[in-house]
Image (cartoon, rainbow, N blue to C red):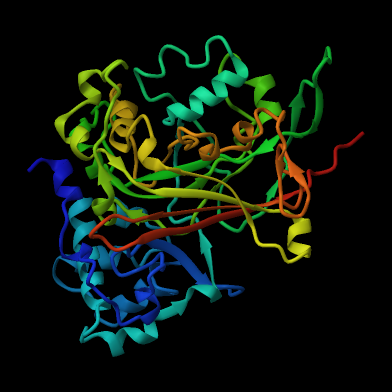
Length: 447
């Protein structure tokens, strides 16, 4: 069995019949069943406690520092558990797939019905409703990719109707280096950015708040074990370096982007904020939801360093994604968030392993905690578009909200929420929770 298969094979932790002594984890629509066990960083809301690593189980969090102190881990899980007494996941993530798997197996066993440690671990639980979160890892570097051919084509049609998809797209996973310092945790408000914009018909730009603020529905990929400078990561070894996935909102100022992006790509239109979900779902937890990765017969087939039998067999991951929006007026009227779109990560043109392999083929060194963005995940039909830019056809087709309002781009007070989950025949449902952000008005501009 090659290295990729060692990560993605099924084992006892995936058994859909498993139940937890944490009752809320056994509910049919629970994101955090015992088959999931995602990692995050938390503390009691409003406290001055240090942030610490926890694992989501049902509507609770298992405090790993407390569980280690209670003697819950031994054997192969002992060293990984000690690494989980830190304030970020980086040290644990850098230990590699064997450590991640050993920790997950022990967590599964101690949280199952009938565990001898139930009474010992009960005091180590904290309610998620009373917690606040931090970005799970120190993110040294962030690269954003462009893996949805449907998104790339939709945007291309708006900008270049005669040539929507540039010729390199189907040959390589396109990406750019983003700003890691402005990546924030779910729930943190995002201020409307101010920058240069060139308004339609104008002859000179002005400094102004963005009038075309947008979200981008993405999947985030956390790197676990890094690679040495000058040493590429081979495709079939790539997933040995991937710790897990999260939900990711790469907020975008489309009017700023349109003025600045030639010739070097996004800059101020992207670096003002990006939002990650609190919980990182491990790649091992996603094993039951793998699918064949395919390339249409008429498309260019990948160069050898981006292709393998293992990729073709199970390189895609089925993650159902959705976007909802609730305006300030909707909140005041007691109206529920309105679903704008849904899509599936399975439709990505480039896979997680291809992103990693291409990123390092020139010898670039990735490090523990680095984050890769998938790029906006849009599906093949209009209602599966992962941004307002696509849904509103560049602002030409307003979307109606239950309050009677319309949207082409985001307004102040709008709250955008992404959710994701996985389901498959013969497997338990698992979820990613949510990534949430509310738009604040722009800062004042001095006259």
